[in-house]
Image 1 (cartoon, rainbow, N blue to C red):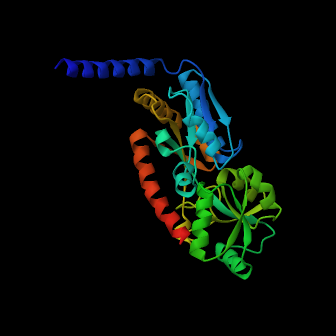
Image 2: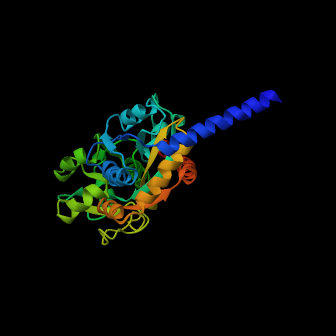
Image 3: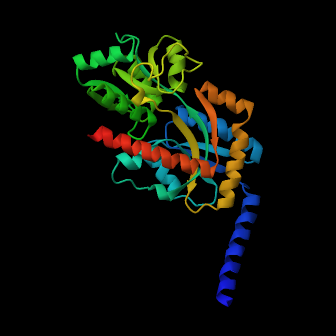
Length: 316
Protein backbone atom coordinates (compact mmCIF):
# COMPACT_ATOMS: atom_id res chain seq x y z
CA UNK A 1 0.00 0.00 0.00
CA UNK A 2 2.82 2.36 0.92
CA UNK A 3 4.56 1.74 -2.40
CA UNK A 4 1.35 2.56 -4.28
CA UNK A 5 0.96 5.74 -2.29
CA UNK A 6 4.54 6.69 -3.01
CA UNK A 7 4.08 5.93 -6.70
CA UNK A 8 0.91 7.95 -7.12
CA UNK A 9 2.27 10.66 -4.89
CA UNK A 10 5.30 10.90 -7.14
CA UNK A 11 3.09 11.12 -10.22
CA UNK A 12 1.07 13.88 -8.59
CA UNK A 13 4.24 15.83 -7.80
CA UNK A 14 5.46 15.49 -11.38
CA UNK A 15 2.14 16.68 -12.80
CA UNK A 16 2.06 19.59 -10.37
CA UNK A 17 5.61 20.57 -11.33
CA UNK A 18 4.72 20.42 -15.04
CA UNK A 19 1.63 22.56 -14.49
CA UNK A 20 3.69 25.15 -12.61
CA UNK A 21 6.32 25.13 -15.35
CA UNK A 22 3.64 25.62 -18.02
CA UNK A 23 2.23 28.62 -16.16
CA UNK A 24 5.62 30.35 -16.30
CA UNK A 25 6.35 29.39 -19.91
CA UNK A 26 7.64 31.31 -21.81
CA UNK A 27 9.97 33.43 -19.71
CA UNK A 28 12.59 33.78 -22.47
CA UNK A 29 12.88 33.62 -26.25
CA UNK A 30 11.49 30.60 -28.12
CA UNK A 31 13.52 29.25 -31.04
CA UNK A 32 11.44 28.29 -34.08
CA UNK A 33 13.42 26.14 -36.54
CA UNK A 34 12.40 26.14 -40.21
CA UNK A 35 14.21 23.26 -41.99
CA UNK A 36 13.93 24.98 -45.38
CA UNK A 37 15.51 28.13 -46.88
CA UNK A 38 14.43 31.62 -45.85
CA UNK A 39 11.85 33.07 -48.20
CA UNK A 40 10.15 29.77 -49.01
CA UNK A 41 6.55 29.01 -48.14
CA UNK A 42 7.41 27.15 -44.90
CA UNK A 43 9.46 30.13 -43.74
CA UNK A 44 6.74 32.62 -44.72
CA UNK A 45 4.04 30.68 -42.86
CA UNK A 46 6.28 30.27 -39.81
CA UNK A 47 7.00 33.99 -39.59
CA UNK A 48 3.32 34.87 -39.92
CA UNK A 49 2.28 32.76 -36.93
CA UNK A 50 5.42 33.38 -34.87
CA UNK A 51 5.07 37.16 -35.02
CA UNK A 52 1.62 36.93 -33.46
CA UNK A 53 2.73 34.37 -30.86
CA UNK A 54 5.47 36.78 -29.77
CA UNK A 55 2.92 39.56 -29.38
CA UNK A 56 0.44 37.40 -27.47
CA UNK A 57 2.94 35.68 -25.17
CA UNK A 58 5.31 38.57 -24.56
CA UNK A 59 8.53 36.82 -25.58
CA UNK A 60 10.44 36.70 -28.89
CA UNK A 61 9.71 33.78 -31.20
CA UNK A 62 12.93 33.74 -33.20
CA UNK A 63 12.54 32.07 -36.59
CA UNK A 64 15.73 30.35 -37.73
CA UNK A 65 16.00 28.94 -41.25
CA UNK A 66 18.17 25.82 -41.07
CA UNK A 67 17.91 24.18 -44.52
CA UNK A 68 19.73 21.23 -45.99
CA UNK A 69 19.56 17.49 -46.60
CA UNK A 70 15.90 17.60 -47.57
CA UNK A 71 14.82 19.22 -44.27
CA UNK A 72 16.71 16.64 -42.22
CA UNK A 73 19.41 18.97 -40.86
CA UNK A 74 16.97 21.33 -39.17
CA UNK A 75 14.79 18.47 -37.98
CA UNK A 76 17.71 16.61 -36.43
CA UNK A 77 18.80 19.77 -34.61
CA UNK A 78 15.40 19.99 -32.92
CA UNK A 79 15.40 16.34 -31.85
CA UNK A 80 18.63 16.97 -29.94
CA UNK A 81 17.38 20.17 -28.28
CA UNK A 82 16.14 20.28 -24.67
CA UNK A 83 12.51 19.18 -24.31
CA UNK A 84 11.49 22.35 -22.49
CA UNK A 85 9.20 24.15 -24.92
CA UNK A 86 11.85 26.64 -26.02
CA UNK A 87 12.68 24.91 -29.32
CA UNK A 88 9.98 24.19 -31.89
CA UNK A 89 10.20 22.64 -35.35
CA UNK A 90 8.03 24.01 -38.13
CA UNK A 91 6.75 20.76 -39.58
CA UNK A 92 5.29 19.97 -42.98
CA UNK A 93 4.68 16.77 -44.98
CA UNK A 94 8.40 15.93 -44.93
CA UNK A 95 7.95 14.71 -41.37
CA UNK A 96 5.81 11.87 -42.74
CA UNK A 97 7.44 11.35 -46.12
CA UNK A 98 11.14 11.41 -45.29
CA UNK A 99 11.02 8.30 -43.06
CA UNK A 100 9.07 6.52 -45.82
CA UNK A 101 11.48 7.42 -48.61
CA UNK A 102 14.93 7.80 -47.07
CA UNK A 103 17.19 5.30 -45.37
CA UNK A 104 19.69 6.16 -42.66
CA UNK A 105 17.90 9.17 -41.17
CA UNK A 106 19.49 10.40 -37.96
CA UNK A 107 16.07 11.25 -36.52
CA UNK A 108 12.89 9.23 -36.09
CA UNK A 109 9.24 10.17 -35.79
CA UNK A 110 9.26 9.10 -32.15
CA UNK A 111 11.84 11.82 -31.44
CA UNK A 112 9.18 14.48 -31.95
CA UNK A 113 5.65 15.13 -30.71
CA UNK A 114 2.90 17.05 -32.56
CA UNK A 115 1.92 20.37 -31.00
CA UNK A 116 -0.48 22.04 -33.43
CA UNK A 117 -1.21 22.46 -37.12
CA UNK A 118 -1.84 26.05 -38.10
CA UNK A 119 -2.14 26.43 -41.90
CA UNK A 120 -2.48 24.73 -45.27
CA UNK A 121 -1.64 25.91 -48.79
CA UNK A 122 -1.86 25.06 -52.46
CA UNK A 123 0.91 24.51 -54.96
CA UNK A 124 0.96 24.81 -58.75
CA UNK A 125 2.34 22.89 -61.68
CA UNK A 126 4.28 25.62 -63.49
CA UNK A 127 6.33 25.76 -66.68
CA UNK A 128 8.50 28.43 -68.32
CA UNK A 129 6.60 30.89 -70.49
CA UNK A 130 8.73 29.62 -73.38
CA UNK A 131 7.16 26.15 -73.03
CA UNK A 132 4.67 25.08 -75.68
CA UNK A 133 2.58 23.33 -73.00
CA UNK A 134 -0.68 25.12 -72.25
CA UNK A 135 -2.11 22.30 -70.11
CA UNK A 136 -0.94 19.24 -68.21
CA UNK A 137 -2.05 17.04 -71.09
CA UNK A 138 0.08 19.16 -73.44
CA UNK A 139 3.02 18.62 -71.11
CA UNK A 140 2.42 14.87 -71.07
CA UNK A 141 2.56 14.85 -74.87
CA UNK A 142 5.88 16.72 -74.74
CA UNK A 143 7.30 14.32 -72.15
CA UNK A 144 6.25 11.26 -74.13
CA UNK A 145 7.84 12.68 -77.27
CA UNK A 146 11.06 13.45 -75.38
CA UNK A 147 11.54 11.10 -72.39
CA UNK A 148 13.80 12.37 -69.61
CA UNK A 149 12.73 16.00 -69.48
CA UNK A 150 14.10 17.62 -66.35
CA UNK A 151 11.98 18.91 -63.49
CA UNK A 152 12.82 20.92 -60.39
CA UNK A 153 12.88 18.80 -57.25
CA UNK A 154 13.06 20.42 -53.79
CA UNK A 155 13.28 17.18 -51.82
CA UNK A 156 11.80 13.71 -51.69
CA UNK A 157 9.68 14.44 -48.62
CA UNK A 158 8.04 17.62 -49.86
CA UNK A 159 4.41 17.79 -50.94
CA UNK A 160 5.55 19.33 -54.21
CA UNK A 161 7.82 16.40 -55.09
CA UNK A 162 5.18 13.90 -54.06
CA UNK A 163 2.66 15.64 -56.34
CA UNK A 164 5.18 15.48 -59.20
CA UNK A 165 5.82 11.78 -58.63
CA UNK A 166 2.12 10.98 -58.42
CA UNK A 167 1.51 12.93 -61.63
CA UNK A 168 4.42 11.22 -63.38
CA UNK A 169 3.13 7.78 -62.38
CA UNK A 170 -0.46 8.57 -63.40
CA UNK A 171 0.63 10.04 -66.74
CA UNK A 172 3.08 7.24 -67.49
CA UNK A 173 5.97 9.58 -68.29
CA UNK A 174 9.68 9.60 -67.45
CA UNK A 175 11.16 12.75 -65.88
CA UNK A 176 14.65 13.42 -64.52
CA UNK A 177 15.03 15.41 -61.28
CA UNK A 178 17.28 18.40 -60.77
CA UNK A 179 17.70 18.93 -57.04
CA UNK A 180 17.44 22.25 -55.19
CA UNK A 181 17.59 23.20 -51.52
CA UNK A 182 14.24 24.97 -51.83
CA UNK A 183 11.78 26.76 -54.06
CA UNK A 184 13.54 30.16 -54.08
CA UNK A 185 16.69 28.55 -55.51
CA UNK A 186 14.65 26.73 -58.17
CA UNK A 187 12.74 29.72 -59.58
CA UNK A 188 15.53 31.31 -61.71
CA UNK A 189 16.28 28.04 -63.52
CA UNK A 190 12.59 27.40 -64.10
CA UNK A 191 12.01 30.87 -65.53
CA UNK A 192 15.04 30.47 -67.79
CA UNK A 193 13.83 27.11 -69.06
CA UNK A 194 16.72 25.10 -67.59
CA UNK A 195 14.10 22.75 -66.11
CA UNK A 196 10.87 22.01 -67.92
CA UNK A 197 8.35 21.94 -65.05
CA UNK A 198 8.05 22.16 -61.29
CA UNK A 199 5.41 21.96 -58.63
CA UNK A 200 5.93 24.99 -56.40
CA UNK A 201 4.09 26.73 -53.56
CA UNK A 202 1.62 29.49 -54.32
CA UNK A 203 3.66 31.98 -52.30
CA UNK A 204 6.49 31.68 -54.82
CA UNK A 205 4.74 31.25 -58.13
CA UNK A 206 1.54 33.33 -57.99
CA UNK A 207 3.47 36.65 -58.23
CA UNK A 208 5.60 35.24 -61.07
CA UNK A 209 2.57 33.88 -62.94
CA UNK A 210 0.74 37.19 -62.47
CA UNK A 211 3.80 39.02 -63.82
CA UNK A 212 3.94 36.78 -66.90
CA UNK A 213 7.25 35.14 -65.90
CA UNK A 214 5.81 31.62 -65.47
CA UNK A 215 2.77 29.75 -66.75
CA UNK A 216 0.57 27.81 -64.33
CA UNK A 217 -0.96 24.61 -65.70
CA UNK A 218 -2.81 23.30 -62.63
CA UNK A 219 -3.46 23.84 -58.93
CA UNK A 220 -2.75 20.84 -56.66
CA UNK A 221 -5.64 21.68 -54.33
CA UNK A 222 -9.13 20.18 -54.49
CA UNK A 223 -10.59 23.57 -55.37
CA UNK A 224 -9.51 26.49 -57.53
CA UNK A 225 -7.68 29.36 -55.89
CA UNK A 226 -9.11 32.86 -55.70
CA UNK A 227 -5.61 34.10 -56.55
CA UNK A 228 -5.52 32.35 -59.95
CA UNK A 229 -9.16 31.37 -60.56
CA UNK A 230 -8.60 30.58 -64.24
CA UNK A 231 -6.07 27.84 -63.44
CA UNK A 232 -7.77 24.41 -63.20
CA UNK A 233 -7.26 21.99 -60.37
CA UNK A 234 -5.07 19.02 -61.14
CA UNK A 235 -8.21 16.86 -61.04
CA UNK A 236 -9.91 19.11 -63.59
CA UNK A 237 -6.75 18.87 -65.67
CA UNK A 238 -7.20 15.09 -65.79
CA UNK A 239 -4.90 13.82 -63.05
CA UNK A 240 -6.81 13.60 -59.74
CA UNK A 241 -4.18 11.22 -58.35
CA UNK A 242 -1.79 14.19 -57.98
CA UNK A 243 -4.15 16.26 -55.83
CA UNK A 244 -2.24 17.18 -52.66
CA UNK A 245 -2.23 20.06 -50.17
CA UNK A 246 0.66 21.36 -48.14
CA UNK A 247 0.21 21.85 -44.40
CA UNK A 248 2.28 23.53 -41.71
CA UNK A 249 2.48 22.93 -37.98
CA UNK A 250 4.66 22.78 -34.89
CA UNK A 251 6.45 19.76 -33.47
CA UNK A 252 8.52 19.70 -30.27
CA UNK A 253 11.21 17.38 -28.96
CA UNK A 254 9.79 14.21 -27.40
CA UNK A 255 9.50 14.59 -23.66
CA UNK A 256 8.27 18.18 -23.75
CA UNK A 257 5.79 18.49 -20.85
CA UNK A 258 2.21 17.95 -22.05
CA UNK A 259 1.07 21.03 -20.17
CA UNK A 260 3.54 23.15 -22.14
CA UNK A 261 2.45 21.57 -25.41
CA UNK A 262 -1.16 22.38 -24.56
CA UNK A 263 -0.24 25.97 -23.73
CA UNK A 264 1.54 26.36 -27.08
CA UNK A 265 -1.43 24.83 -28.87
CA UNK A 266 -3.92 27.20 -27.22
CA UNK A 267 -1.73 30.18 -28.10
CA UNK A 268 -1.38 28.91 -31.68
CA UNK A 269 -5.16 28.56 -32.03
CA UNK A 270 -5.60 32.16 -30.95
CA UNK A 271 -2.79 33.45 -33.17
CA UNK A 272 -4.08 31.60 -36.25
CA UNK A 273 -7.52 33.19 -35.80
CA UNK A 274 -6.25 36.79 -36.01
CA UNK A 275 -7.10 38.82 -39.14
CA UNK A 276 -3.53 39.97 -39.77
CA UNK A 277 -2.31 36.36 -39.63
CA UNK A 278 -5.07 35.33 -42.03
CA UNK A 279 -3.92 38.08 -44.38
CA UNK A 280 -0.29 36.92 -44.25
CA UNK A 281 -1.35 33.31 -44.84
CA UNK A 282 -3.47 34.38 -47.81
CA UNK A 283 -0.60 36.39 -49.30
CA UNK A 284 1.41 33.17 -49.23
CA UNK A 285 -1.39 31.24 -50.91
CA UNK A 286 -2.57 29.60 -47.69
CA UNK A 287 -5.38 29.45 -45.19
CA UNK A 288 -5.62 29.00 -41.44
CA UNK A 289 -6.17 25.30 -40.70
CA UNK A 290 -5.75 24.81 -36.95
CA UNK A 291 -5.65 21.40 -35.30
CA UNK A 292 -4.98 20.77 -31.62
CA UNK A 293 -2.43 18.11 -30.54
CA UNK A 294 -4.91 15.22 -30.61
CA UNK A 295 -6.46 16.26 -33.94
CA UNK A 296 -3.03 16.82 -35.43
CA UNK A 297 -1.81 13.41 -34.33
CA UNK A 298 -4.87 11.73 -35.90
CA UNK A 299 -4.35 13.71 -39.10
CA UNK A 300 -0.69 12.65 -39.25
CA UNK A 301 -1.59 8.97 -38.86
CA UNK A 302 -4.14 9.22 -41.68
CA UNK A 303 -1.68 11.04 -43.94
CA UNK A 304 1.04 8.51 -43.18
CA UNK A 305 -1.22 5.68 -44.31
CA UNK A 306 -2.07 7.55 -47.51
CA UNK A 307 1.53 8.38 -48.37
CA UNK A 308 2.74 4.89 -47.54
CA UNK A 309 0.35 3.56 -50.19
CA UNK A 310 1.51 6.25 -52.63
CA UNK A 311 5.19 5.46 -52.10
CA UNK A 312 4.59 1.75 -52.65
CA UNK A 313 2.68 2.56 -55.83
CA UNK A 314 5.48 4.80 -57.13
CA UNK A 315 8.10 2.11 -56.50
CA UNK A 316 6.30 -0.50 -58.59
